[in-house]
Image (cartoon, rainbow over all chains, first blue to last red; front, side):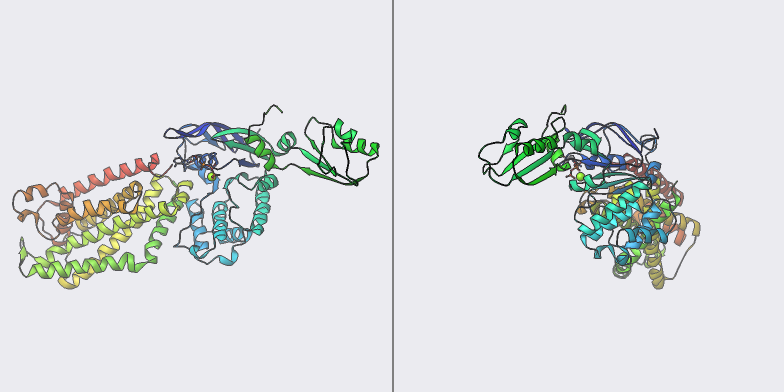
Length: 309
Length: 253
Ligand SMILES: Nc1ncnc2c1ncn2[C@@H]1O[C@H](COP(=O)(O)OP(=O)(O)OP(=O)(O)O)[C@@H](O)[C@H]1O
Ligand SMILES: [Mg+2]
């Protein structure tokens, strides 16, 4: 396997008596989109900050593309881009100037073509010469994203990049993130919009109270923890539970009109239930199925559903 | 070494104070001119000469020094402190700028501002007294080194401060008394005992006297003592700031 983009071993952060990160172990593969999910205060920003030089870790090792940050804290940063959770801006400078300064900090010569490219991707071109203080909240976040990407980092941290941005930018950003990943950029993303993680992530890490509860391929996670709900609506209300429904432990609504079956991994497929219902000759008006979303899975895991499932 | 990063930070610092010339250059210039008029004219009617130098001439090096010290300190301290308040310090901490690059950028910018104000002060004062530069190299050494020292101290103050009032702690409680008691407006030699002896422990005395020697060709102390003291302070302050930045003290969570 190629060198991991990021490798954490026993990463621990304590603030006085409070432990924000409990010995985290995590490997991020190059080119993947990794979503770090967890409730407020779980430790997501602290983890990202430890890698990006904003937080002094208490213990553990951090390697960025194989380079140990304890040995050389500065040069791995050429490869890193960070969109911080908190919006910041320097009111003395325009959008284009801010990006030029950012390029300079990363040891790159002035490159207006690159700046235009990033501004266009983030739909900020029209505000190129505006002073940063004159931007709307969402535009400031776009600028923050532009600043994190302008030097073409190979490892990008997006800490809630779409908080407070409009639907259009969210879609634009998703497209852009996928394009970056396709070009080989590694992306670590935190978000409270689980739709976003579901849409983008290759793998998902779930963190709570400073502990990584689980790291899993998104698809596997959805399959393993996910469920399919099948709701059958009958043409006529049923007086009693049909025999097929009883066999499959489905649930009949009080008015007798609908039957709900929850299909989990290891259960009989819902198709069999439907076949049995047809065989019984029950006239069916409608069948609706709903896959559980990452949101449902996350809630279950955070509630501590046994992981042996 | 991230040379380009360092240059970018330096240029950004210079542009920052140039954006508000009224506040950063003009207002200190007015205050120094006021010192000159108020202290110079009111006192010079009673104090004719100090150790043989006409009083108005005597205070010029001290005023230049004040302009440099105050502005160098103010620039690096406020600039770095504002990045902490505004959150843009994140950009600095995340980017590949090590402690050396950060220091070069902030100190360089602050020195430029200090030297601009010092130069303008000298120009204004020169219109009252004429210009005198007896030992140009000595003057240059003291100008550069005092602007450097106060820029470094400004950085230290900004790193340490968590609130706006704390950033004023050093200028108000340390710099102001030490400079006013540091022989800008009088010769410490002529103070009554024990104040003349006590003044010898004030490092500002040597800086002012060193510059006075460079500009007027005369001073109460050999300029070498002042030069050595200033160099010593510079080395200690530099090492301290470098170490503090490297450790992340008060800059990182
Ligand atoms: N500077 C600090 N001093 C003390 N405690 C801190 C500090 N920074 C963070 N913490 C604590 O560490 C824990 C993790 O915070 P962190 O910001 O990493 O959470 P998060 O997962 O990013 O949450 P959110 O989703 O709200 O952004 C929280 O309990 C927080 O209060
Ligand atoms: Mg956070």
